[in-house]
Structures are given as structure tokens and as C-alpha cells.
Image 1 (cartoon, rainbow, N blue to C red):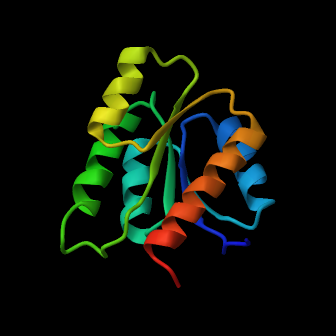
Image 2 (cartoon, helix red, strand yellow):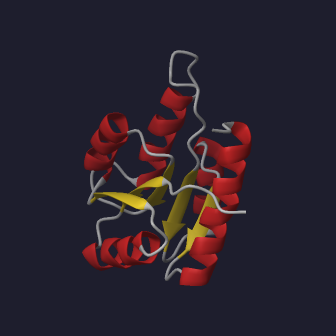
Length: 137
């Protein structure tokens, strides 16, 4: 079954990762909304209303855990658009404690960098199916 493309917010302070994710996801016709830090990611999230967020844990300023908590606090309110926005955290060296903290603040999945493109696309496809099931068009 073919699903429509997603608007994916990619937040990472390493430009090479943003470029790689953009290339991989754009090849699947997803629209990429990029941000180089958590504060910009928050601004892009509130203005662009993405379908899914892919967020690095370790960033200066607002880190990925803080951004995730902020996104989940807004999307859980009844006056939000009513949409569930999955958040996938990622890190090159996340401890079990960091991963557990990610889940505690509301992330929906955790990915280890460097990301295998096939695993990234498979996980995005899983969330596409869930989103389309929850919010059929």
C-alpha cells in the first residue's frame, strides 16, 4: 500500500547529517523541514506543522530531550490540531539512561547514529502507516 509523503522536521546541529537525511527522505518524496538547533526546530515545528520529527539529542541551547518534551506538551493539548506527531530521537552515543529519558519525555522511538538508510526508511514507513490509520484521508 502506498502512502502519501510526510512533512518531516529534521533537527540536527551537524550539517552533514541534515544533508544525508534530506537526501534519503527526499528520494522517497518526503518534504523536509530542516533546523540546525533546538530553538530553530521549535520555531519550525510551530510554523510548519510537520507530520513527524527526527531530532538529535545532543545540541547546544535547547537539546533534543527538551525539544521533544516541548513538542509533546503542545500536541497533547486538546486545543492543538488533534494530530499525533511522532518524535524519533537519535544520537551517536546515547546511554541507556539517555534513551530512557527520551521515552520519559515523550519520544516515540530512538535511533542510533550513524543511521542505516534502510532502517530509517523502514521506521518512517511504520509511522506513515500509523499516522494514516489514526488520521485517514
